[in-house]
Image 1 (cartoon, helix red, strand yellow):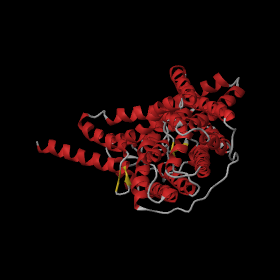
Image 2 (spheres, rainbow, N blue to C red; image 1 turned 180 degrees about the horizontal axis):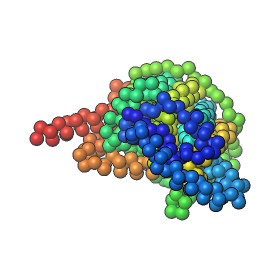
Image 3 (cartoon, rainbow, N blue to C red; image 1 turned 45 degrees about the vertical axis):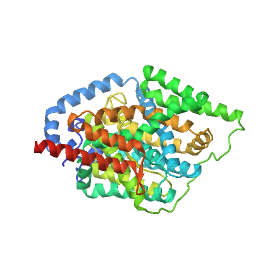
Image 4 (tube, rainbow, N blue to C red; image 1 turned 135 degrees about the vertical axis):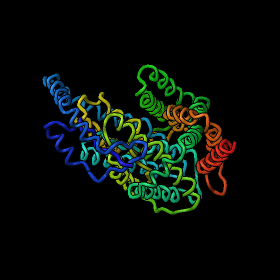
Length: 456
């Protein structure tokens, strides 16, 4: 499972940034998912073949932009801020819904949102600066949806915090023992995606219920989301979130105003471990975070010519998850969807400068962390169901892509459907939640069907 370093075409100039990038790369850190591996000798070949073209392209880029350094700088800043805002506004309500579902009080949920925002910010700042790559960390949005679907577990909030701590330990173990990552990668993609789709279904139904129960608060968000889905898809969810906050603010003005803390505060929780929390939360959360965030995050950056330092990234996210767990944070990981905002040519035409976008996004996350408690105070003051309705809007796209991936292979379609149905059922058996049983049922059905075909 060997991975090459960053394509040499990004490093064949005489600029200081390129030199720093080469110096910062950890040459011993070349282990990643098997599916993303490529020949280790690619760097030298690419360097020999592309040095002249890279130099000429860089010269052309410099000539074309030399007259407007202020514009380029402003573009980098705006790209970094937008990347952070899109990530935060699109999924913060999902995190709150998940933490509240597993037993967190409003203060503990606010602390958890603060924890994941700060840890992902610090991890992003470290990795992007050290490796001069647009590496962006994020909280696990599918993981938060899993929490919302699973709900209260045996042992309550302390047991959930214990599960978060276990997830951090498993991610760290992945960095130290690559075979664990290979084991996760061996879970058939249709089964993993079907489990995620089943977990997401209940949340994606929330906007429907919200429109019926609280039309005045939910309808503005739905209308804004639908309009921007046509005009500016990237901004559909963040703007819908803003519309919901405005609607809630108006509602609060008519019902006694805002009552609660506005300044960020950490609420530490002593973790406990139960078998139910490990099987219902920790293992499914680890699998979802790896399969739906970390591996796709590597693939996104790879598509733009960057090779992620896998072991260091897993170490940083594992430590961040474990440390943040005590404050209520569920998990951080490599960004997948928002990673493209920082790594694509839209962020900056020069691939060597795109790391600045991620770096600025990291600083923006730290600023957003300051308003996390105020956000929780506002959304938790709304009637029950409004927050989950907005969270459901944020997850519709993820549900669609998960279902597409789950049902794409006809040979695994039956197993995927069983996995989806069991995960969506929300059952609890022997104090263990539906996500675990969905994986088990899907794997059993897949093994049975494939063994029958082999025998035939």
